[in-house]
Every structure is written in C-alpha cells, then in structure tokens.
Image (cartoon, rainbow, N blue to C red; front, top):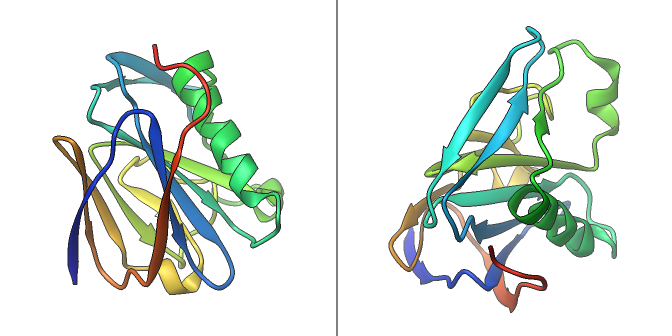
Length: 159
C-alpha cells in the first residue's frame, strides 16, 4: 500500500513497529553530512532541503523517541558525522539507533546495524522491514506494510 504523507521541515514522522520504530524528518536546508567508512574514507553526502534523515530505534523503550529526535538534531543541526562500522565489528550488536540520509531509504531487518555505507538501506525491526520511504516535495511517499504512524513537531532550530 502506498501513502503520500505531508511533512513540513519542522515535523517528524514516527513509523511504529512492535519491537522498534523509525523517525523521519526533512533535512530542511542545503548542506552536507560527512560519513566515515571502514576503509578509512570520508564521504560527503550533499543534502537538499527535501531529502530525509531516517533514524531507526532497534528496540522499543520509552526513550527511543527522544533518542531518534536527538540523533536527527545532531545530524541536521550540529553536523555530527555518520560512522559506518566494518561488517564484523562487535559493536554493531550494541547500537540502539542507526541512521540513513538521502532521497530514499528502504527498511530491512536482515542487515547488520551500522555496517552499510549505502545510504538507501537502513536496519529496522521485523514489522517495518520492506517499507520504502522516498522524499517528495512537501512530504514523503511511503510504500509497503505501514501499519501505525504519527507526526509530531520537531524541537529545535532549522538552519
């Protein structure tokens, strides 16, 4: 099922699953995000205002929502870089949040969290796996098995 959902720069949408959630916000300005890779490279992701930042909480605690908001704020407003771990890195099992940035993100439960430099795929809980989120002017297009979501105001400034 496809959904076109309006999303303003000062809003965040939360897609909810039984064992996790994903928060998505617009990048809301032109800029860039640096990404460090396991190959000791630094990649620059050039972002447009309509592009999205998606953050997946790999658990369903009461603090997950606040963590998602915080990571989006750090990426969008502070310029915190993304860090990609090697595929066999033991810390990937301990990541409570992972992020992806760009025009489109596909959620997948069958990947190792934090180990994919490709920014079109993001680890997510089982019941959100298969959902595809695309940036469109003034909102998002969401394809796949989306069951529950809500939109909230996003705290903080927009550059």
